[in-house]
Length: 298
Image 1 (cartoon, one colour):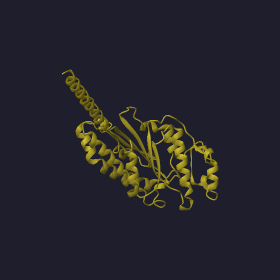
Image 2 (cartoon, helix red, strand yellow; image 1 turned 120 degrees about the vertical axis):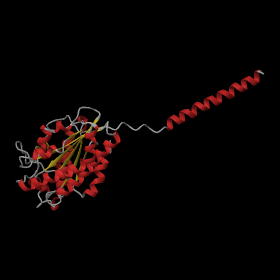
Image 3 (cartoon, helix red, strand yellow; image 1 turned 90 degrees about the vertical axis):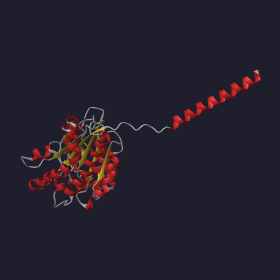
Image 4 (cartoon, one colour; image 1 turned 45 degrees about the horizontal axis):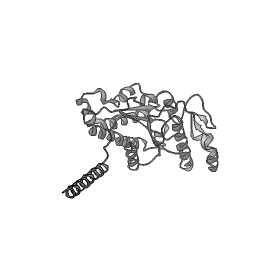
């Protein structure tokens, strides 16, 4: 009898231990929980310098607006996933330089949305109309710029990062702060202009001519060249740059130079590795994949 009892208890313990192992295996095989989707705080900065001059780049307006449709649709998808009650995303536009139109502020105000301050009815209107509102009002902004601009060789994006980029950062950690810049990469700024590009605030095509005839020298000199950083506190900002384009197809090295300098500049301002991407100009149908990949990478 004692022998029978010992055998029975041993069998019970073996089954119990086996059951425990099965539970552990099931726990280990459980799919990871999807992380909480964050609210979006998207800022779109438009370089309205001579890069959109129809004589230089006749497709700039159309291509920009098509790419921005991809961004607004991403914003709408985020709203849908969070549902109307919980969607508190923010999206806005900055213009550098602004068009010479006294009424331009009224148009830009139609492109600023803060769902955190809206009731459900207001959020639904944003969801239903966002892409169309951006398309219509940006079309008006571009047309007004083209009609009135004196065409600078580059935008004062350096000044924006010095004095205005804080407007793109929401301190609430429930938000993703994303800045999307449409630019050919050339900079124009008053004040400190260093034609040798050591700690400069301006990069214009004429400053890069020394490397056109001797591209090998660029690799030797590039570490001593940089855009002057005025801050180092952009750890909570993601940046996507779209449209880097050489002033002339003969000088494609400009694109390599601009991408290197912009990337170095972002790192010196504290933007984390992997939180920025700098892309050359291309058709919207091609860039759509890259834009979506960047926006969905977090």
